[in-house]
Length: 287
Image 1 (cartoon, rainbow, N blue to C red):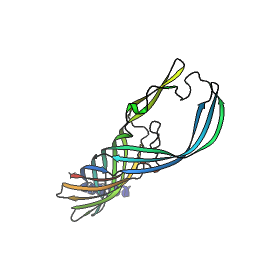
Image 2: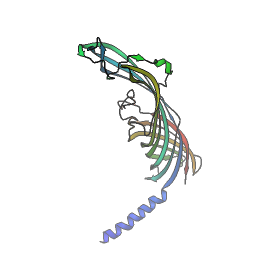
Image 3: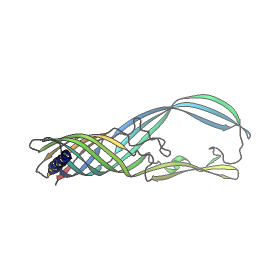
Image 4: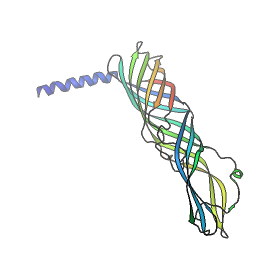
């Protein structure tokens, strides 16, 4: 009991000593994300049916390699964080906090078919009645009539951010260098994409097809990774005890997109996926 009575005051004094050195900061930064490219190749199959009379059709199955090129072009981003700086020695401290950032990225892609090879050719039963299948008897227009469509998808994110870093204070606490991790999760996400559709209807026993464009908006964006982890490095200089500047670099080690999506079949999954590299710069205020 006596030992317990001695330990309690010692712990309280230690906590008071640590609390006296705790600093609070507000950190505001501009985020610049570098553009990124990615290549993908995958083997696929495709089956095509062509009627040869009113009751029979020729069905062919092809194998091919689909090669895709993706380009990620990020827009300007911003981040605002509240931080707590806890000293662990005369030089080192642990800094952690909570923040929010805004980021955007435009994804464009191209796709080409390589090495097409016929695997099988069969004759199958076929009925010309109804609208089953994708064959069109009459095209009301062509894809060029609806004009060129936007070849990409635009994503915007508002993320909740939790930064944690180990920092060293040098030059009489003027210079601060640190390294750590950055965890973020989207609290609001939006995606916009223009798509080309081929719509069909049966008129007098014939299938009439029409090309149309449609702008699709998803909120939240489909299949965005909820847990995103990055590594960070920062260097800051304090002009006074309260005001300073900070620059840093951040590399995400988990991808933004969790997997390929239905509407966004062309978008890659997370192997390797979009893992942004960012430079950031801003102001810090201590109080």
